[in-house]
Amino acid sequence: AQSVTQLDSQVPVFEEAPVELRCNYSSSVSVYLFWYVQYPNQGLQLLLKYLSGSTLVKGINGFEAEFNKSQTSFHLRKPSVHISDTAEYFCAVSEGGGSNYKLTFGKGTLLTVNP
Amino acid sequence: DAGVIQSPRHEVTEMGQEVTLRCKPISGHNSLFWYRQTMMRGLELLIYFNNNVPIDDSGMPEDRFSAKMPNASFSTLKIQPSEPRDSAVYFCASSLGGVATQYFGPGTRLLVL
Image 1 (spheres, rainbow over the protein chains, first blue to last red):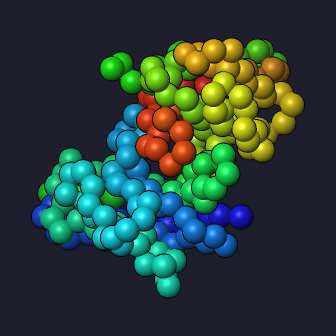
Image 2 (cartoon, rainbow over the protein chains, first blue to last red):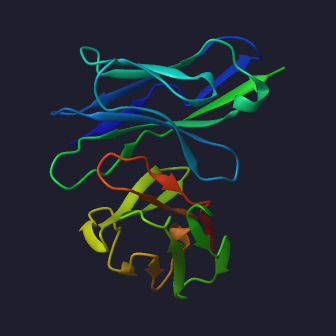
């Protein structure tokens, strides 16, 4: 069965600093990987996704993530964060195949950007 | 496009009452998902429909929960009878199927007293 571990429940950083949010997954088959962001009192929005091809994926708002198959990781990075990036970030995995493409989400990482 | 629409946005009810949550997916999307979010358990998939047919309901907690999708533009999640441990935010999401992006609604915040 697929599973996702987000190694940090909270990450505080200062504005304009770089940030990395860590995500590891467990699966016995090929996977598709996603990062979603949730702003307070809102639903989730897709930041980026890895389906195939280049292991470095660029998303919205200046975020990027790198798929590392040998380390089963999909860490999210941004070189310089803004106050408006304060939100909860969720990593998700889908094993796909057949007709079942359900997503399994990690517990989330709360990113707090301080002035 | 209006996005995924959920109603009500907030629901407060007493233990034992029936609760019905509603979702209108994005027009043209053929997959619909119901999730539950709590502090303790995070975001859990409850049930997933493809072309109005339930594909995976392994996440439905127990018989008190039921979900229907009578047509491509409407789905309901019903809890009967409700219990305090059902208090959570319930999200509906829709997609074009496969590994297409899932678009989430704003959620229904349910409090069962």
